Image 1 (cartoon, one colour):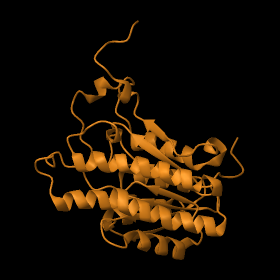
Image 2 (cartoon, one colour; image 1 turned 90 degrees about the vertical axis):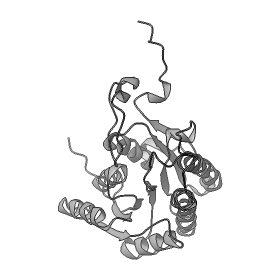
Image 3 (cartoon, helix red, strand yellow; image 1 turned 180 degrees about the vertical axis):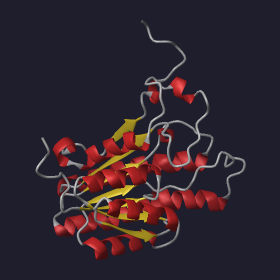
Length: 257
């Protein structure tokens, strides 16, 4: 039987990094539940394609081509989203600069380091602070989901990436503690090996995952949607939800039969 109402009807979500991968998948999941979606990406073509696909399905979507590595970019996101749809109820921060295997501790440049931290942490914080204050002022019981990484806990040979994701995880906890009394929830969503967004896994990686397959953007987006719907996660804040098919419990010993 078809549901008579959608879980996110008449609400608005900001989704960064929505041009492809997990951000794009989340945009479709959220829109399908009745929300207006304001999408952000630095790549105009990919962002435009996503908006066109959403509108073709009849979903209300708007977008801003905004580079979150630049000063005042979070302010641009908030202003444009509010102008497009009014009050903001949700934020999904999925944007992150591309990871390059060559950017090791020996070779990563100051500019690359700064861009990673600016997008993941500084803009992530500024956007959360702007929207969080807006939610408090408007009496909105808001929800936020920030995309982190398994490498917030374990090295990746990319120190700028791993440490910025660890910082994002603590940012989620800080904001969750500050906002809980206002009815605002924020959680971290941690993907494992996900075949999306340009990720090119080693050939045998799936064999190290207990579920014996790489994850998809849809696998992560479905859990992200769960964290945004009070019906399913209304008492969940300041935590990290891992979506990795069991990769984080992999070791070299076969399970007992």
